[in-house]
Image (cartoon, rainbow, N blue to C red):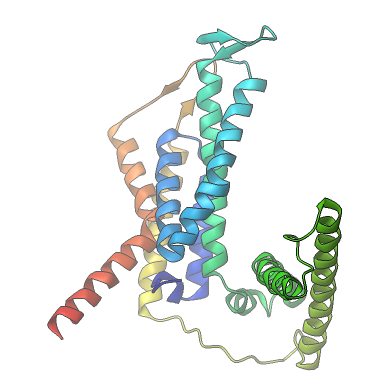
Length: 296
């Protein structure tokens, strides 16, 4: 991460924020909510991961969105506005196309939010929050969250080591490449199992999960975290109140229809304020930092 201020907040604030934005992203299907959530998630992902986030979006997120958007109208034929007929005779409707785009947007938004969650909620934060309540499960979840990044990093190390002796997947014919790939995978799985056993033994020797065990922590809930808590709760209250009042009412079938009122705009503004919270904090800190650097 590159100077992300929000990740320096208390772990409870980080967890509460991601629970709120991910939960709302999976629940609300209104196009405005989907667009706002996707914009906020993508902006924050690019801010904390820079080129890595853009590469991940182009290589994985964008193809996933296109495939999901195309699959929906291929299997869902509901809707009153027929655009054309497929070769099998089923109708292609405008409503199914729009619903497919909405479903794809929801999917990639949730995936993007989880990528941000994985960067901000480190294993030590997770253990700090749930170590005393559910010590065994919190340790397993913290190990699972960092499993993929560590697997990828270790796989690169093993592949480079095998390459030095001519046993990587870039040398030889197809069968030899498969053999080298299986060898690398076997080494990687062995490393993962040994690492899990060593971690379990290490935590057991330290008395992890025993009653009355104390733990050192660098996290302290201060005034800044208090303001952030009030901000998140206020925005979430606006969003939930709007949902209870029917401000997000929008249907895709049989025809596309939604309602727009002054209250709806206010609710969308609250939704945007919640999603953009990390970026607002980072923008404020960046402005302060530039002023300090220019006056120094």
